[in-house]
Each structure stands twice: as structure tokens, then as C-alpha cells.
Length: 293
Length: 266
Image (tube, rainbow over all chains, first blue to last red; front, side):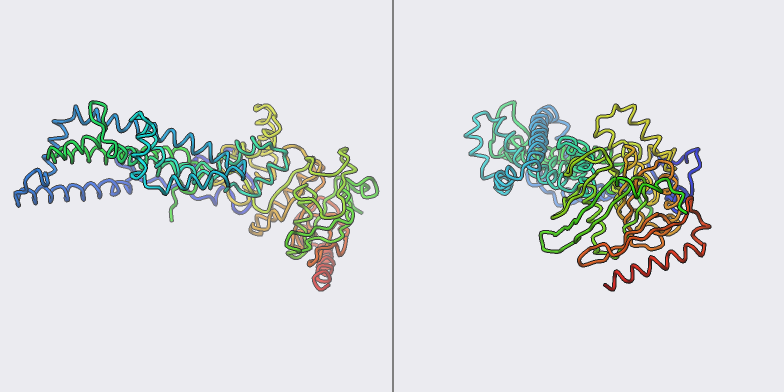
């Protein structure tokens, strides 16, 4: 809400401008509101504590590094092997983002088509559900055989895992447009396309974004799981293969380093999709508005 | 003794002519039965009745949202002959403001113009003018979430009037507002009606509101919904606080209240 009140005097109607909630300015530290800092500091403190205990336990009990490496060793390995690991990370992320993009395009397109034609929805939705409930690990070998190209198979696997939340959320969103608003569009002779563009798509946006948040993480999981099944070698291999490889060679610190990279990527994807969601909804949607109570 | 702009329109060609209209829903409920009603051009008519008397259903049928099971709704006075779902020159205000939460006040008011492919700049100009007319100058870029209940309803009225329709249909628009806000909006609505000369059809269950606003009150009864009485409110405009506290107002309210009681008892 803009804090400056308009220059024109607006007639009282009992609940007018003066009655609107006041935006109370909160003191801030380093650009973030003071009340926000515990949210950052508390998890960091817990993290440092747990890592410290872990390091201490490993050293105290003299656990060999091929069983459980301490966090310091994992960090050292991450730096030492950065060359190989970062190449593999890039391979995995490329698959993840391509799968996510495909999931968005196919999911939203299908959702729009389904809401335009009940027949299409009735005919195709069950198959989308079947794709969703079939464990990806079980069908990945088949996809690898059918698709031929390994990168394409990985992409298909990651896409299958990622696309359903976008599809089902967007369908829900498109159907959730206010009924009276639909009537209003009807009254003004809106075409199907106009109703879709000005009413249904904006109404579906919060739902789509909720789906995107879930699918971002799932695309990464799908890419990693498919890589595990495919087990490709060579320079073009992703992080999952690095984990398998290092496991065979008992380079456990490297396994942990690769795992750490996957986790951090997942967190980054979640933060990025949350930020996109916040930026798009902050002006109008309940979920993005701050409330005093 | 009425000094309304539509004083002699009742005898001329009505804007809307409703003949023996009945509406039965799929579940068998008869929402409206055998309604005959003429709406004169420029009139301010209230449809008054208890809930379930079909007043909203009737209003929606006039708007073309759902057609009558039997009977006809014609528009002899609109220059648009024939009946059906063809868009009418009308504005509709729902019980809730029904605004698009993702669009600011100006964009919400612009909607009917955008749907008719009015050029953007012209649409913005007309919408801004309409917002000013309902007392919301300066709130063009506010989002519905940032406006009070009364202000949202003003935006909704501006949106309904931005095409300068011949008829404004309102479905209990102020029912959810507090009394102070409601009185304020009643006055502003009357001023708008006085200036813009549209036909107003106002659905309400409040005797006081219908007497204060209208030239004519159509009292309806429930189960099945039907017209029980057609009252003239022969008090002059402009009406204000003075009218609200006058013996004449009290008398008219007693009269309308009696008719409503008869309708409920019937």
C-alpha cells in the first residue's frame, strides 16, 4: 500500500481511507526488517551447532573417512574436486531446467485445453494421473531404451516427475475464477479468448506458482533419479553418476560433496521460485500480504 | 407531485417489458411465477421482498443471465428488438464488489471498455472520469485489497456505469455494508442516477432503503416468487437526511412494510 494519501479529499463513507490499516514502519538492519533476522540467524546457528557436533564426533571416535567423513573434509573435497563436480552439476542443472521449462509449457497448455474442452479432459487426464503415480525408477529403464539418446531420456524422466503438479494446480486455478466475474464477462459479451486472458489466466496464477514451487524441486529429483538409473559415464555425466562412481571407489567425502551440491541446488531452486511467486503476487494475493495480526 | 426525470415515462413505451415470466430450476423449485412488469425509461424501481422470493433471479433474467422457462422479456424501448442473450445496454452490480483482485481500480473500471476493444488511452480516460464521479479520484492505482468495503462497491458501480448504459441492475449491492456507509452510498447513487438519467433496478430486502431510493417499489412474495404489490413513492427528489427523518418517509415506510408483511403472510 502506498503510504502517501492522495491529495484529493474523498468523502467519508465510514470505512474510507482513514480506516484502512496503517503501514507501520519497522526498524531495519542491513536492509532487512529486524523481525526478519531470527529467521535467518536461527537456522544458521542450528546448522553450525550440528556441523560442529558432527566434526567432533567423527574425530573423537576416529571414524574412518570412507565410513563417515567430517564436514571439514567434505568441504576440502568440494574445493579440491570443484572442476569435475561443477561440470557435472551443470549437466544435472541443464536437464533440470529444460525439464522444468517443458513441464511449464506442456502443463499450462494442457490445463488450458482441458478447461476449454471437458471431453479432452475426460479423455486425457486419467493418463496424466497414471504417469504421475507410476514410480519413475520403474519406468526409467524403458524410457532409456525407447528414447535412444541418453540426454533425451533423462529429460523425459525429469519432465514426467515435474509436470503433474503444474498441470493439476493450473487446472484448479483456471476453474477457480469467481463465478460472478464470469457472469460479468458474459454480460459484456466477452469472447472465450478474452475470458481466458483477462479472467481465468490471472485467477490461475497463484495456483500455477504453487505448482511451480513443487515442480522445481521435483525436476531436480527426477533428473538425479534418472541419472542413477541410466548410470552414464564420461565427461557428459551428471552429479548422480559422480556419486555412483565415487561410491564404487570408496571416495565417500566426494559422495558427500556431490550430495551437498544437489541439496544446495534444490534450495536455490526453491528460493528462486518463491521469489518469482512473491514478486508476481505481492500487490494483490492474500498469500503474499503482510498482516499485523 | 413527483419531480423525477421520468415522471411521464410510465405511460410511454417501457424500456423493458416482462410478460408472464416464470422460472423453474432443474431441481423443480419455482423461483418466479407469472411475473408481469414494465420498467419505464429513467425510472428508479426497487424489487423488495424476503429472501427466496425470486427477486435476484428476476434481475438476472432481465440482464440475460439465464432465460425464463416461460414468458418473454422484451426491450421495446431500447431500439434493440427481439429477445435472447444478445448483450444489452446494461450495467450490473453484484452483491459483492466482484472486482478482479489482480487489477487496480482503474483497470477494473476499464474492463467493459477493454472487452469492447476501446483504444487504451480513451478507455483509461473514461474510466478515470467514472472513478472521479463515484468519488474515488486519486485511488486509480489502488488494488481492491487496499480499499474499504464501501470503496470497493464504488469501484463496482463505476465499472457498471462506464459504458453509460441505459439501465443499471443492482442485486442487493449495499447489503454487506455498515449503515453509515450504506446511507452515504445511497445518497451518491441517487445523485448519479439524477445526473446520468439511467433506469435503475434495485433489488433489496430493506424497506427503508427501497423507500428512500425509489420512485416505485415492486413488492414480491416467496415460494413461488411473484409480484404482490406495485407501490408509487411519490416523494420529490432530491432526497436527503431531511427526507429520511420526515413524517412522509415514516408513512411510506409503514405502507411498504404493511405490503411486505402481507406478501410474507400470503
